[in-house]
Length: 253
Image (cartoon, rainbow, N blue to C red; front, side, top):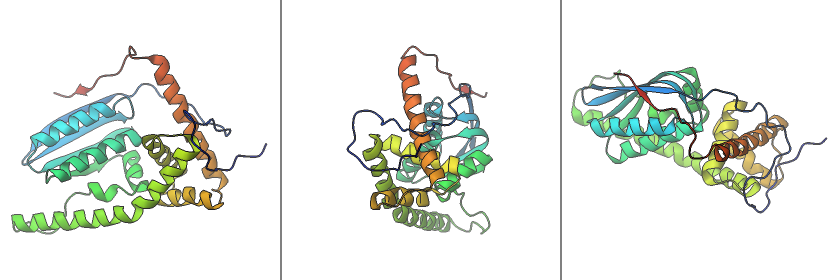
C-alpha cells in the first residue's frame, strides 16, 4: 500500500487519522521526578532527577518559578539525572527563560544528561541556556552585565532567523492535521528527536511540502507516527478523567 504524502487541507475537528504506523505506543511507566533546590550565592541551584514529560512538567514549572523568584541573579540547572525529557520539558525551560530575561536574570544549564543535551541541540535552544563565560576573569559588575547582554543579543538574532520557518511549519501541520499551535510544536520536536534531525531543517522540509516537495519517506513515517501518538495520548488522557492518580513531586530535604 502506498504511503500518504503530506498535503494541506482544511482543518477539521480533532486530529486527522494518519494511515502510517504510529510506532511503539507509550509503554513507559508513569514518570517520577525529584527536584531539590539550594541557594548558591546570588543564584539558586536546581537539581532534577527522573523523567520530564506531560505528567511532571507542572512540578518542574512550579519548582523553577519558585527558585527563580528566590534568586538574585538567576538559577543554575543540574539535569544530569534526567533520563527522559520531551517537548513538555523543553516548553517549561523556554517559559522560565522568558520570565528570567524579563526580570533581568538568567537560566543556565550547568549539567545535562545525554537526553537533555540532544533535545537542546536538535531544537537549537542550547545557546539560550549556556552558562556565562567563566574563562574571562570577572573584573567588574558592569563587564559581567555587558557579556550577558551580548550573549542574549546573539541568541535572539539566531532565534529570529529560524523562527519564521518554524512558525510556517507549525501552520502546515495545523492545517493538515487540525492541530493546535502547541500540539504542532510538540510534533515537530518529537520528530526532531526521533529522526535525529535539527528542528530548522525539519521545518524547512515540512514547509516545502506545500510547494510539492515531499518529505523523505523516513521523515514522513516519523511525522505520521508522532501525530498518531499525540492523538492516542489525548484519548488516553480523556479516558482517565479528572480522578486519575497523578504522581506528585518529591522534594529532597
